[in-house]
Image (cartoon, rainbow, N blue to C red; front, top):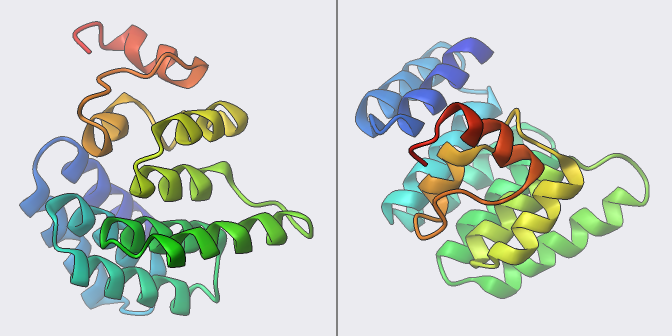
Length: 165
């Protein structure tokens, strides 16, 4: 199931959003209770400006994952893109509080700050978490097209393989 969801994300990242969304929808047909495709669709729809869909999908991902930090980051991203910054900031506060009790992946905060348009803070968390396996230049190009390649340790690895970036 995870392979299908990851494949949908990668397909979207490669500029084939419709094919990626179809793959994610097929994954949901197999298991509508799997939160990752919901979270991924939320990010894709947020990028496309389909903000009501993005928020609803992120809320479903949070519900199905019992509030997993990554899905909360997706929800903060969607809410911020939809102009609901105070709600997105409240989720960031929740993630901060949760991090005092257990590990919160940096990617959750990266997504939230990208949604808020705070690229400096997103870069800071990218560096802190060194999430190159999840967030590379492709993802940055998707969410922050004006920043073709972020000069972080994570993006240097990605960009070394793709000098055109």
